[in-house]
Each structure stands twice: as structure tokens, then as C-alpha cells.
Image (tube, rainbow, N blue to C red; front, top):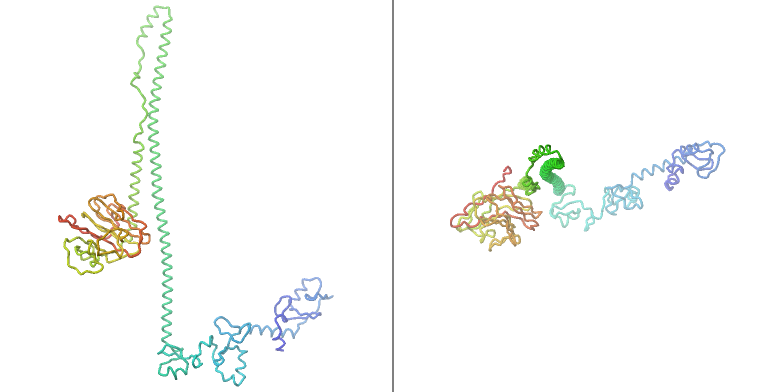
Length: 539
């Protein structure tokens, strides 16, 4: 019976209606088999009783009985399918090397044959005398990699001296004097594996942190962009309202002047029309009197006509068009005043924004020219007028009376330097590789982005120099750098005014804050120090 169902295919044990393995199979008089439920439901929906396969018609509904033999065979076939499904190899399990088609799960691996077997294909090793001597172990994948190439034995040990896997024969030959441990007892490797796992987890966490930092940066950028747009809309809306009011005021002023002129003209016209009417009446009286023949009436009326009615001397009266000279200018002056107020707010907001990137810097004495004197805290520098004996090094300026800070930067940073009471100075940033030994030529091409001040002017050092308006009482200068944007900006901190910005700068190295207090002349006019000051955003 076993051979009967194991050699058959699934089609032989399937119902042609539901296409599944028979469930309580019954046979029709024509010899075909169906599930009892399937054929019963089929005939319940038909007018005539026919076989679904051969269409043989039956006069009456056949009396169906369970096909006991087919039922047993179908049950055994279904059981074999379930067993086969259970024995099929799953991910992570070792497959049988002999199975063709559907691979079953291996139950043993042979260290002699170097093959893994399922339960069926393992049978010869359990029956044949010669195969019984083979060493069987729990299923292993890649058996050839687990065997010693020299002794053809299983690698079961670990040599702690040479850090390699060995077989039992290796410990009696090449690794005889070496300490070995079973593979599962190599605690060192286990600890190393744990360390590697910890390092990997740390690297994963670092990258997750990097992702979060990038997302946070994007969110901050969006917030900054929204704030910038909102501030711009607020200021431009205020300016638009101001312009509209300026236009309305100008229109109102011009219209009022025109209205006043029109009113005066209207009044004068009315007065002239009244005098014309009076004179017309007098003319009529004169004509009428000239035609009278009553001498008494003539003499009496003529006496009243001697005195003319009162009239204005119109030779001195004129209507002058209104003058609009200065009207538009006064409106624009008002607009300019409002614009200056808004610009002041904008400059103040800009300065506060860059001041958020304040960095704490101190002057590096190893870079200072021998004439310079630095304060103990590294915040002040001035020209002492005397060349001191100091050890030379590759960082020290030997020609320019200059100094840079100990700290370098490559991002956004801001610092402030007090230049009060000085008659000359240089201030800005310089790249790391500037020439500190020869005569200094200050420009972006040589690695300097600096502002120069003297009594005759203020200059941004470039090729050619950019001359700037000389600001009175320049006491403190702020320097802001955006490394990625290639931007260097200078601010008059006390006046809270932007002085100048160098854009599209090419930065390829770290940048150092750069100070040059210039020579102190013989009268001591430039003796005041340059002082790196803490930022006070409440100014």
C-alpha cells in the first residue's frame, strides 16, 4: 500500500471539483471519485444529475458511499506531504547534499564523505558495515572549509600561539608545544568578537547621530529661512506702508494747495462778476437818463450819477499758481527718515545674529613679532618699540608687526577687537600657510582678508584695495566669517553698522584671527593696545 501512494502524484489523489486532496471521497456509478461535500453541492445546484467529468446522466440521484480504500490512500498521501514539508530545508538550516529537486533538511554530516545527509539518504550509513565506521556529526555547512587540509581531519581546536584553527593531529606535529583550546572555549576570540560588536554598534550609533545632526541642521535652516522671510516681509511691508503714506500725504498736500488756489480764484471771480453787474446797471441808468426830456429829472438824477459805485483796484490783484517746489523732497525726506529707522533695526538684527557665533580666542605668543607686547591673558597687544630677544620658530612673524591667535577655525565664527585711540591697525583673518618670514603683502591672494585703518582712510586690502568711507570714532570692530559660504564681514560694533563684506572667498585651510597694532611713533600716538573683547549683545 505504501508503494501505491508514494509512487503516485498529487493529481491522483485530488478532487476534480475543489482540486484539493480528497476529503471523504465517494464514487459515482460511472466510476469517478469526488469529495462527498463537493459532489453533493454540485448536484444541489443542477436540474439533472450528471457526472462532472464524463457527463453521464443518472435518472435518479445516486446513493453515494465513502470509498474506504481511496480515503485511506488520500489520508496517507496528505500525511506524506506534511512530513515532506516539515523536512524541507529552511533558511539557516543545513540542506542535504544528495537531494535533487526539493532539498530536505540534513540530520547528520559525515566527516569521511564530507557530505550532509537527510534522514532518507543517511540510511546506508546506518545499514552498510563499511559506512557505519564513518564519523557522523551534527549537520555542518561548508564541510570542506572545516577540515584540516594537511590531515583531512575536523578543525576542532584553536592554537593560541599562531591564532589558527587546527585538528587533533596538528597538536601532535606542527603545534605540539603550542597551547590549544577547543573552538567553543576560545574566550579571547569571544571577547574580541564582543569588542568588534561593540565597535560596530558604536559606529552605527555615531552614524545615527550624524543623521540626526543633519536633520537638526535642516530643521534649523528651515526655521532660519522662515524667520528671515518673516523679518523681510515685516520690514518691506512697513516700507510699503510708509511709501503709500508718503504718496497719500504728497497727494493730499498738492490737492490742498490746488484747492486753496481754486477757492481764491472762485471768490475773485464772484467779486468781479458782482462789480460787472453793478457797472452794467449804472450803464443802463446812464443810457436811460441820456434820452430823458425832463430837465428837472435830468438834473436831479445826474447829481446821483456823479459818484461811481465802490470798486476794487484790480491792477494789483492776481491769482498765482501754487508752488510745489520742495513738496516731493519733503515727502522723500520723511521716507528717508523712516527707511533709516528700518535699516537701523535691520543692521542691529544682523549684528546680533552674527554675534551668536562668538568664539573665545587668545593671542599666540609664539607667533608675535619681537616688538609686540602681549598681556598675560593673551587678549591685548601693542607695539613696545623695542625688539626683544626671543627664540625663533616657524610660526613667528619676523617682518610684519603681527600676531595670530592660538585657535584656528573652519566654520562660522565671530570675534570683536577694540581699536579705540589707535591711529593705525590691521585686523581680519589669515590662513594657516601664510608667509611669516618675508615682507608681508596683504591680500586674499596671499592668504589675508583684512581691514586697514589709518588717519587718512579705511581700506579693505585687496588687489586693488577697496577704499571705504571713514567712520568717525571707530572704537570696536567685529569680524564674522562663514567658511562654507566664503564670506568675511566687518562691523562697527558701537554704531552697529556693517562696514564691508568680502564675498566668494576661497578658503582651503583653517583660518586664524589676525591682528597688527602697527608701529608706535616717537610721540606715542599709536600706543593704545588692540584688545580682544567679549561680545555684549545688549549694546
